[in-house]
Length: 207
Image 1 (cartoon, one colour):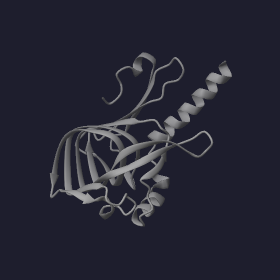
Image 2: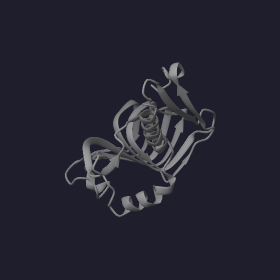
Image 3: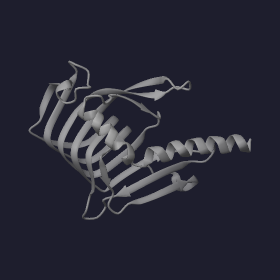
Image 4: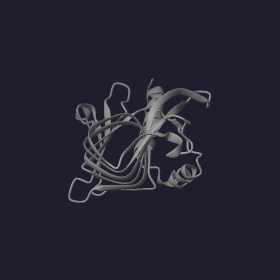
């Protein structure tokens, strides 16, 4: 029983850590794929969602269109498919950024939280790509164009599908449920990371 528990624990924690650490080592390859149209609105993901919150996001070069992500099946092939909204932001500032993910072990609640940009200096990201299930907040767009063919925004998108873009976006009270995020650089000013376990985990998610 203990071996089984340890095995499950190690598996979940590896998935947990992989989701929460920014994938800077892979960012160059991903961004090259975006520039050549190979990206993949068909991304393989873990299947676990995580939450991102912020008091305010300021973003330049905003693009949004539909796509899908896939879980990897037990046989190593593609598993369950999830339709998602893909957002690209050339440069983003996030004030009072919060990121959380649940990684419960058998019989033990676990929530990992990351906070940054809580002072005068925000967290900053370049070439941000987000695959999300949902987004809540109050948004203001500058020079927005709605109803564009998505392939004009990213050649890898499905031809004829809906897309929109704007020069700038401001989102306050941001609440986002995501499946995948990457950035060329992610500067987390005032980073605070905490593993909340047991009773301490209750109510520790970003929202």
